[in-house]
Each structure stands twice: as C-alpha cells, then as structure tokens.
Amino acid sequence: MARFAGLFPTVRFLALPAALLCLTFLAGCEMLPTRVTDRFVPIEPQEREFEAERPVVFQAVQLAFRKIGFKVDRALEAQGIVVARSGLRSDDAFVGVRQYEFDIKLREFGEGVTKIAVRLQEQIEGEVKAGATSQVLRDHGLYDSFYAALDEALREVAAVPASGAK
Image (tube, rainbow, N blue to C red; front, side):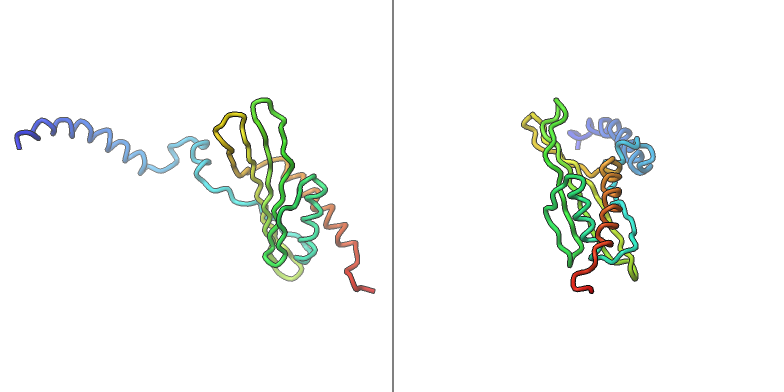
C-alpha cells in the first residue's frame, strides 16, 4: 500500500482537468464553433414538390441532367432513383481532379404531385498521394442550374403526348 501512496497527489492533479473536459462535453455543442459542428451534422437533401406524375418527373430529371452536362449513371424508375455525375474537372492548379455527383430520390406525394430529394456531392482527388475526399454540399450553384433545367425539361416532357395517345 505504501507503494501507491505517492500516486494520490498525481491522481488529484489529473482529476481536475478531466472533470473540466467532461463538463465541456456535457455542456453541449453550443460551445463549439459552427464550422466544427457542421462537420458532424448530416446534410439533409433539398426537397421540392412538382405538380406532375412521377413518370413524367422521372423523365424530366434525366433530361435536365443532359441539359447541364451530367451523365446519368443509374436510373431506376421503380425505386425512384436517379444518380448522375459531371465530367472530371481540373480547374484549380492545387486540386488534381474534381467531380460532382447528384443523387435524386423521387416519390409520389399525393394525386399528381411528386416530391424529389436532391443531394449534391463533391469528390476531389488531389495531386498528393493522400487519396480522394468526398463531401455533401449544402449550397452550390449546381442546385440552381439543375432546378432551372428541370423546370424547362418538365415543360418539354409534358408537351410531348404520351405514346399510344391519339
């Protein structure tokens, strides 16, 4: 027991910083800067409603991607999923390659109303051997470009008569 007697002052000395650290965590995330907390909060997709049937919106989404120069990688009508990617971009001297990916989910939201959930992700592969990074973007001009193209595509798709109609 005498061997451990010298440790108690050290334990008391370390207990105070440990207690302060625990209180900081228990105080909540309000004490942390917004930039830090934003990294750990999942970004919700942007949602919009359109007064059109789901198959019409599904076709218009794919047409909108072609209008803004994206390639549709996956389009599953039954599941209401469309995934599209931009071409590889190398517009920054310090960034190797950048690519954007849209992930769209469609669902019917009543009679003649379709809701879409849109998420944009940016993937960057640098010149260094550190590998690629990927992050979901909360706000970006590509959202506006997509929605403008989608509005135009919805008008075009709605103007085309359904196959088999007389």
